[in-house]
Length: 210
Ligand code: SF4
Image 1: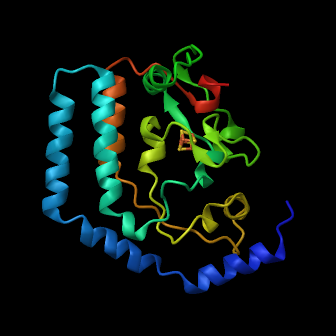
Image 2 (image 1 turned 180 degrees about the horizontal axis):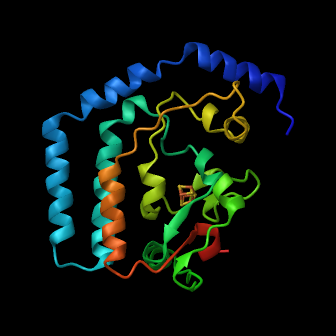
Image 3 (image 1 turned 120 degrees about the vertical axis):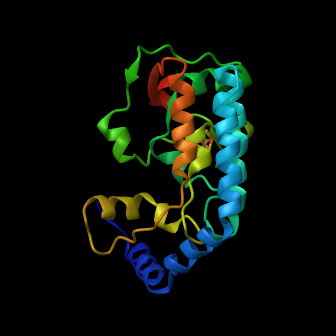
């Protein structure tokens, strides 16, 4: 893959100027033990309540947005950025149904199990998410968990570019490896919620909504 000298220079400059350690420290400082304890309590309450998978998922989305706000000042992920809408967006069929409810589009029914292909797992630049319209998420309020948990510790989406991801996959030293500050307890809660409904199919959002 040919990468422009402009992009290579931009990555070089970013590597020289980045302060990922400082950003990670800021995330850790914002997530005080009180804040983490409160979040754990909310997750525990959510998991134990006798509501449906749909209701639980919606509540989990709210908690994911809360976690996002907690670190918003030091991450690149913001409304309007669509960098990760071009790579794999793996969702569960329960989430596909929620999107279907919100959009009136019926998701494809897929057999239980994982359907994402190796090419999707590697990411492809030329296949934006079905719901990306003119560079914006057309279902922002209803976007799935994976779109909410992303927390890239950077100032913009430069390092989320296909070029940088390609270099990283090739173990090229010119790649800029950006730490993420995703919250594993939220992901674990998400898995518990959908497993409570037998888990079903996992696939890229484009497979549910071609
Ligand atoms: S659902 Fe929205 S935020 Fe998520 S990948 Fe698609 S367009 Fe992007």
